[in-house]
Length: 489
Image 1: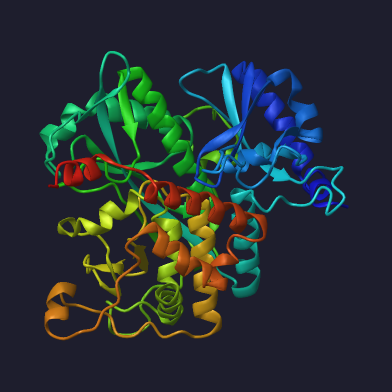
Image 2: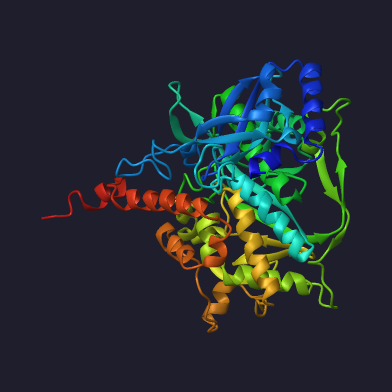
């Protein structure tokens, strides 16, 4: 059978399809968004009436391959990735991800897996390698089969709530003042974040904490860590939730990394650990009847955290953790292209007065390093911002971990000093790439991280991001005019 046929006929799926039909009837769902994730993390797909649920589960729907690249043109007016002559992908829904939208309870969403068209001459019905969500699921399964470890991830998504003019254009201001951790500024956005939390809980988020950060209108809301794929789905869903709440409050939900200079940017620190064992457990979050499938409300609990210290030094991870850090340290340059994936991302790294992760070093609770052990058993990768694609990031980290564990890579000694003071004392520390172009070059030289974007995925990512970089280099900006307009004679 083809990959598509295997997916449709996998054991237990027919039962899940029937369970979704029962949910559709119970919740009175009329319409369903069938969605997948593009190269930039954008949510794309189609809407289909709920009457056609079973048919779509069996046959799928078709959409142009170029949707995986946002159907964007490059600066030479060529469609990125796939031209108009390409066949159409087939999207097959994953019924376990079905969930009602809390802001319109007649509508639901479900994630899909993408496949090559059934009529392709080469690899018909094969897994579409430009499907980043499908890639992450495959890579996570391969990693667990090889090493026996499950990657669990918790993300810290910072973003800004900006005000808008009557015509919908941005005013250039954040809703609140740039006072970090101030409850009064947090309170000013209470109606907004309480609505976000209401919707999030209705879509399976176990919300655990939140605060006002130190940029105008900047909030961070956190939920419980989980399996890498489920967490990526929740981060994508969180962005959709924020966009909807912004519409309701006439605000802009801004995930752009650095819209303002002189204040902090929006990072998305990624905390991770590798586990053995554990069991999936449903968290109903107060619902008597779940407004979605069990999987949406499921979190993995228990097991053994292999990153926990295995010596008397509680600041050092165990042997598996150290090798994993070694792998990430080796591939930091290439990973930066994924974690800091836009031209604007590097405004965050250049504006260094705000704890930006510029240096390729690691330490325990040391925020001046690109990597830090944030607590015993947990490792925080800091060179990730709010614009990143979590599916690509998860796959890239798994590949770096695999290299570190397989080849027993030593990360070196952790740095306990402020990295700037360590440099003054003579320590030679490499910097991360400080432009998108440099990061893309590092990725082009790193076959290990490239393997996290197999075949067509890397082609599309490089094409899309290199075009973004070239457009920037060829653009005249306000800075150019301010600096050079009247500099002569």
